[in-house]
Image 1 (tube, rainbow over the protein chains, first blue to last red):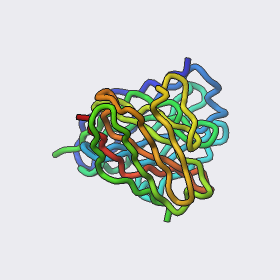
Image 2 (cartoon, chains in turn blue, cyan; image 1 turned 45 degrees about the vertical axis):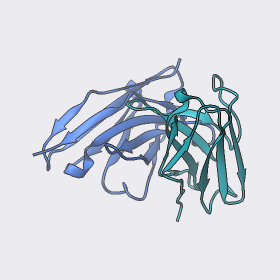
Image 3 (cartoon, rainbow over the protein chains, first blue to last red; image 1 turned 90 degrees about the vertical axis):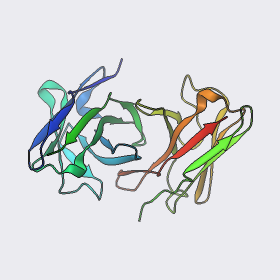
Length: 118
Length: 107
């Protein structure tokens, strides 16, 4: 069974850094693209980017290039989403999302709520 | 640019047919996928590869694609089908994009 288990909710202040995680089990981690989807409260889904853990090849959505970093640690089957400087506008639920054969999303994590507030 | 456009809302009575459209210039060359998100939950794939139903998805869900438009059809919509529907596609670099979402109301 494929499982994507995300780290817990975070409350941060503007200017803080943050790294959230998603631990994967149930399939060959290194050989499947996996990434992140953002959902601002009350808004739609936004594709942020994906990484291929086997060689760390990474693709970012246009709105997220340079704003976040997606990384993978093959030794513990985990991917990360990292911010160096959080803004209030980063407040959202972030879903870990595995890509399928056609780069559609075929498995989702449970979501991590990130709240950025003074 | 790679954008997908959906109507913000669709409303039908129970038992009627709901149709949700998704338009985009890339759709003639790319596959379309449809997701249903119910309140507070992660999305669920209801249509794959333009018109395939994943295991466990009821037969009343179907999909089609022609030219720059893809359509999700719910034949005999039920109250349990309410939620936000998103179309999804990718570009040639495997970067994904979601449509803006359509809120389906069945009442």
